[in-house]
Image (tube, rainbow, N blue to C red; front, side, top):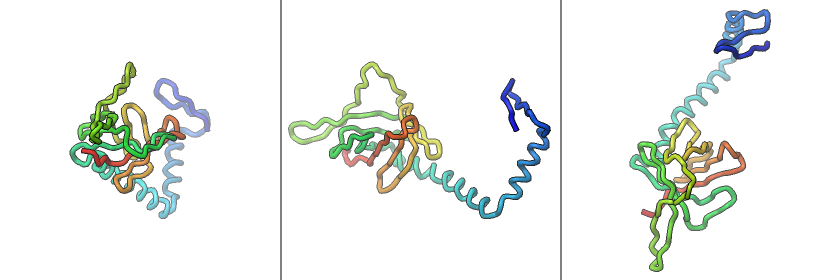
Length: 164
């Protein structure tokens, strides 16, 4: 069955009326076996429940710094960059500088003439950081593994910062 989108209405190009089409969908849903329904229900609940867990992990209830330990193919043995995720959705990107006495300080990263939104947002398993969408693949041991949805070969690995 083919249909096209025109003036915000679906126009069907077959003998089935819209009502028959809806009835056929309902019939297929009724024929779905119970195991499939339970599996879909559990998957939905799993993703729904993870939102709060992910948000609490990312902000730690007060806003948290996350060090970048892997950005694409670059691996950082000592943290060089950090994100701050605030509770109200603010996001800042920092670089670390080490002084002669060995102390480490965060400085707001200067992007030059590039402008990025200073926000983050979580939608189920997608984390939007400064306008870029990342799939949240793993959240274990205060470590996040993210895959850039715009460039799936690009990943970002963050670890909760130990630097205060």
